[in-house]
Amino acid sequence: MTWHAPLALLERYAAGDLDDIQADSIEAHLPACGQCREEIAGLAGAAIVERSWANVVAELDAPRPGPLESALARAGVPGHIARLLAATPALRLSWLLACALVLGFAVWAAGEREHGAYWFLVLAPLLPLAGVALAYGPDVDPTYEIGLAAPMRSFALLLIRAVAVLATTGVLATIAGLALDGPHWSAAAWLAPSLGLTLASLALATRAVPLLAFGGLATLWIAGTGAGWLWAREPLDLFSPGGQLCFVLLAALAALVLIRNADGFECRGAMT
Amino acid sequence: MTRTTIETFSLYKRYGAADVVADLDLSIRPGVTGLLGPNGAGKTTLMRMLATVLAPSDGCMSLLGLNPHVAGERIELRRRLGYMPQEPGFHRQFTAFEFVDYVAILKEMTDARARHREVRRVLERVGLEDLAGRRLRKLSGGMRKRVALAQALLGDPDLLVLDEPSSELDPEQRMRFRELVSELGDSGRTVLVSTHQTDDVAALCERVIVLRDGRATFDGTPAQLAALAAGRVWAAGARDDRAQLSWRTAAGAHRHVGEPPAGAQLVDPTIEDGYLLLAGTAAVAGGATS
Image (cartoon, rainbow over all chains, first blue to last red; front, side):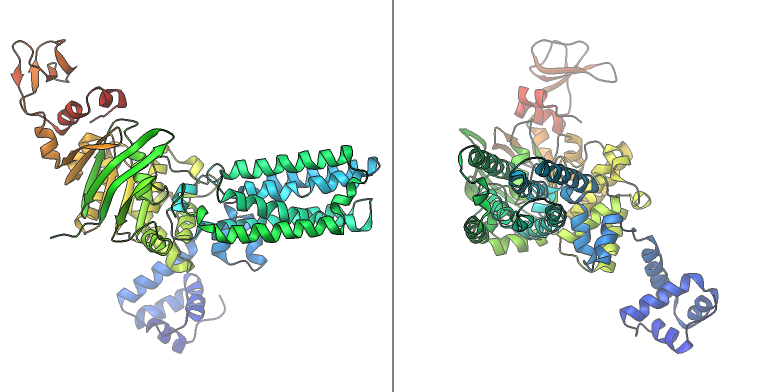
């Protein structure tokens, strides 16, 4: 220890006149500096010393964030939002690794056959859909019921988690798309279907059991794209500009329904 | 006269054709109220409706003077509510501190320093301050119950809905639990405790409600519940088949509830005797214990 807090600063600290940042700085310094502790003990009454020490100990005892929370904090995400995200199953490393593996396999398979990009484009939107399905709900969140009884809107929690899941799977799918050996537009052609499917499933989840809504929509998507592969003359037309526009319209419509029925997430059964 | 904090009017919860809660009218004031009933009586369904996580099929409620049907009032109510579910789930990778901190964020406590102070306070109240840093997956069932109780205490709520809070607690912790709940009841809060533990009800509650098949079959004081069995509880040397219920006590005598066996002596009834008579065989199958 080579420096000491100026006496004037310690006096202001003892009088409780410092702002939070300066007070934090003093409290970070005090545990390591016996001289400043003695100095401040002479300035302050027993009550303030006790209170200040409680604050110091509290800071030292505060839990250290895990790897995900630390990474989110470095990315500028506020601490309380990072903690909400740390409880999201679809943001765990195991899930992200599984997504990366699936996408890697899809890219490899796409290079092995004609129109292989089609199957990559079918698969990529399913990952965010599954991720959002695993992000929140009675079947996947062990604290779902405690969360429902809390004042924070469940819809807000769902949106926070859904955005995080879409961002992470989006990055993975974009990287995989760039490695794709297909038409130049196919690297991003999964994006609109992904948004449309995810928002549509969330809109359905306001009125149905969430896992059923997500599972039902995923099944429909697989069946529809499978039929397209078998019977359409040009299956990739599904992802053409016309098809993309349809998915954007679906996303917009689903967003409207979602906003209108958002209260459906706030209570099990029809509260309103 | 003390205000009413929980009111239900002709409350129903239906699953298919079955009424799990039926035509329930309740009026509860601050203090500790116990909810007894055999398994399947509708206790947990009622608790979940009172905690605003489950919507009734019919009827209405007023909780702390607020209507949970109305979105704005529901949020205001949740700010003043603490809820401990019967089977609380946990993010098991969290420590006890991190988990309670997580729930504190859901309770709109965004300032980290104030929130951490509150988390420490509630963990201390349930005697877990020394285990705050331990992962939930490494805690025993009783300790996890205390973590669940701690999160319900966040923000010092006016209404506490506790569903079987004392199960899995060891005797010392049950005494601490009773101390805590009675303090909360004495300080003007409304505490509703659903339990199978009749001795908890006798020790803690000013009032007890017995549910059976979704309906309230008794609503009164613990002494009134015990009085239902007055003149129908006997001590005898041997088991008698005419008794509605009969068991051998630690002293070696047989305690009979129901018709008197030959040579039996009348004894003072307990709340458990009254409850067993009221709930009948359903209570025995459901496992009311003392």
